[in-house]
Every structure is written in C-alpha cells, then in structure tokens.
Length: 346
View 1 (cartoon, rainbow, N blue to C red):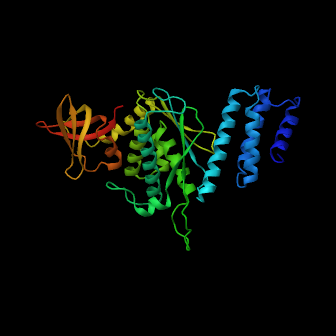
View 2: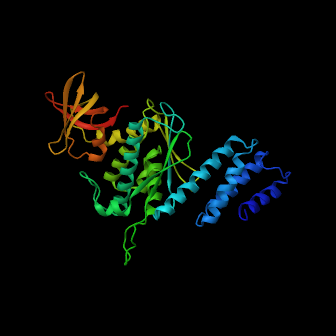
C-alpha cells in the first residue's frame, strides 16, 4: 500500500503515539483527514484498490472506534460507486450531493417507498429548476423541462453507506462535448448553485436567498420546493443535504418547513382584497385542472373546489394528487374559495 501507509505513518509521527493502529482518538481524527485527501486521487484503479484493501483491513480491527467505522464504510461506498461509474463508461460532474432522511418511520438503510420516491422527485425537480434558472429560462409553469436541459443535466442516484436512509445524487456530464463554447453552466456549477439555493431557502433571513436568486418568481418556486422537501415531523424528522466535498450541510426539519411557510405568507397576503378572510382546508387532493384554474379537495366525503390555481407550477402541485394536503384559501362573497397556497400534510 505504497500510497496509504506513508500517510498513516506520517499521522502517527505527528501525534507521537506508539505504532499500534487506531487506539487513540487524536490519531484517528488525523488519519481520517488524511484518508479524505487520498480519496481525491480515485482517478486510478490502483489507488482505489489499495484504499479498499486498507479499509477492509482497518474494519477488521476490534479497537476501531464507531465513528471511524462509519467513515471507512463511507469510503468503501465511494470507491464502489467510482468503480461502477468507470465500468459503465459514464462521466459525472464533481461535487455530488448526499441526501439523508432520519427519524420517524425511517430505519437504518430503509424507509417507506412513497416517502423516498417523493423526496427523490423533489430533488430532481430542484436540479432541473436550478439549471433553468442558471440559463435564464423564463419560469416554467407547465410541462417537463426541455429535452436539452434533461440531457445536459441528467441527475443519477447512487447507493450511499447505510446510516439513516441515504442516497447520493450525481449529475451526468454530457456524453459529447460541444464543438463550440456555449454560455450554458457546467454541471458542477449546477450542483454548487443547488446547494446555495437550499441554504438560502432554509435560512431565517430572506435576504440570503434573494442574493442567490434575484428573480421573485424563481425564489417563490424554490421556497415551495424546499418546503415540500422538508418533513412535517410525522413520517420522518430530518432531511440533511450536503456536498460530498463540503463539511457543512443543510438540515431541514419541521421547524424549517414552518419557517418557509412564514416567509411565503406575506407574499400571499399582499395579494388579498379587503373583506376577504383566509380559511384552511385539510383533506385529500382528488382533482386538479390547471387549464381550468381549479383544484378539488375531499373533506369528510365532500368535494370542496378552490379556484385561482392557474399560475401554480405543476411540478409543485402535481405530485400531491391523491395525497393529504393543507390548502390555504381566501373566502369572499358567496361560497367561492380563491387559492393562496398548498402543501402536503403527511
């Protein structure tokens, strides 16, 4: 292990500890910092093979502390993902994203299928929306992203090391490089901006997201997508997103969801008319017709129609059909209800 062991020896020397491997916390922390540096050299099969051998040998040691076991399992999963990508002949942009779901019904390595599928769909929508924002595309209200966007910024899912329930999102590089330079952002810029948008949306200060996303329409859409990603606290407790090369992460919880709703509320309230009152409807979203500008919620067997949803982005509201939702609406003259906002109620 010509590359790994000099790093280990160097760490031991710096800590001035006996040569026995990993019984001391200070040595352990320094060693894993060194291993992260080694992970940057996964470009060759030789280094990956040596690192894999080293990780397996270290995991067999009874004195290995729990945090080090987690680090090494993550290192192994990263190696296996790299191998799978090389074998498939597919190139991915640097700066992949790890999504972790914890608490509630989520167990180590497992979670309800509908819960995970819903979050995966939202993450994909956020990536595509980020690409459209970077390309200065007018906000898309209906339909899927363009074929060009889907081909150039195609997100992939990879297995992550079991902890809570985790998966890795990587953006595939285009298979053919353009002959001429374009103004399109590179996939790695997409990932960086994606993380910046989530940090801004989760921040208590609205100015943070505004500095990243000046467009009010896009900002409102990103806020609602991030809110849909956050837990209500019923089926799971936390969702954490971090870049594989970054130490800091974005943590979304039920309080994050409420904070985002509070941020959105003044925007909706400013559009109200004198004499209108706000009402909240809890039920199942049974029908949706954006063209005809209405949705229907079933509450205790009764259909309640809410109008004025035409400008709502369909990849925000579409996945909620047949799900429990909370609808905020304005009630004016008669029984007519006008749409304000909607979110899923797990």
